[in-house]
Length: 454
Image (cartoon, rainbow, N blue to C red):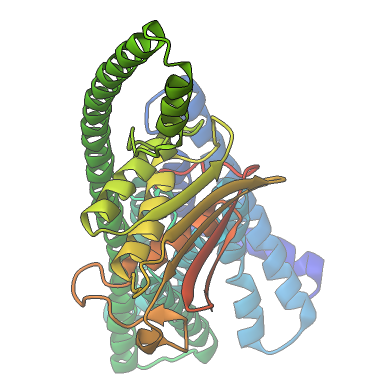
């Protein structure tokens, strides 16, 4: 059959009521995905355009692939396989146009939709065969049977639209692997069922049950992935919020302490000037000069509050200084940053608190060395360096991390948070050991602003 003959044959014979219903449900699913969350004329118009355009494109594109498959004059299964590529390819094109966000999130959503439509087409074929065999190919029942599986596609599109994993930036690698493997398995199963041409009722029933189970597991895995990252996001936000509240309380306490110290200083200065006045009145000029020199050379620790140009960093550092003071650990801090940084406050809090908390928790020094904190701007980057002395016997040589961390909830989560934040701002983080000191070096790009809710 030539290309022209196959093209004409498609519209006269292949394009039947089943095709119209199936393509309708397929296009409806795509329209549901772009349906506006808040009803407005522009959003509804866009969804209608997507529906009409995808419906027309599906019919035309399917006819072209059918004609190409027949023009190749290869085995029958190859012709059938080429024809069944129309919906997956249209789905892929749709994902390129309408799926926004990170590459990994895009990949997961695309795999779910493509594997869904592939297995739905296989279910349609098997359903049609089973119902046709049972009903002696009663036209109406066969049409319903072949169209029925496509009802699943709008539901999956709604699921992905309703619980979009792109809301959160960090995916569980385990769930990503599970979804990828399931999608690949469904695609393979769909292709195999199309090419095999199995005509045994028992085998078809088994394949239908297997496809339905796999499709359910895939949808549930996507839902579970969303709930998992949502739960982690909620926990992280609560921890960050608590840290911010603690920092605010600590700042108030530090301010109160500083005011008290200022009052003491003011009172002390008043007494010193009164004493100097008496000495000068008595003509004891040399003694007064000597007294002033001795007073100026006397070092007194006052105003236990850190201050730089950035208020968020001030709050974090002051909180960490207090934590270290409780454990009788000194922290040497030097910060040179702009007053405003393009990072989310939550990310900045998570990064610094985890870096410094890790340093305090794993601090070990017989010589009472200090923890060093350096935050500096280097060209288009901000560099965060936290260094602390450690017990070299407790260092894991495989990853330069300590093995003394307490097991339980949150174990190892701090380093993951640091890595995730660095990656989110096109930076990097390095954990290293140098001169018996553990060094955490994190770099964030000032030109990358994290726009996602995380």
